[in-house]
Image (cartoon, rainbow, N blue to C red; front, top):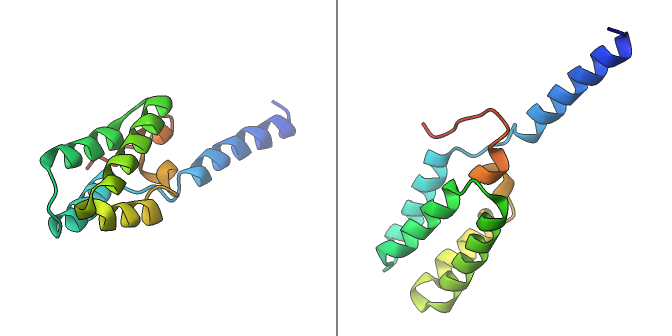
Length: 111
């Protein structure tokens, strides 16, 4: 094995590790969402939809669920404040908490 191949492989592993160094754990995301939702009148189906979206393994399906969730949250007066919170803190960082973006990282944060 040449030195260049050795460094190239090492760099690839480092690149993958850096991509996932700021992963948000499922438990923490779930706890934060429940904490925000607790103060609002919210149907259990909305929370269920958030959990389904969190655990969705397919990126395309996740993106569809994300758009549907945002539409659902923004249409109700009782969930508009959660929608603002969700769009501010979680939508821009979806690669850090959505299962579909972390499935090849070799990390299980469901503890």
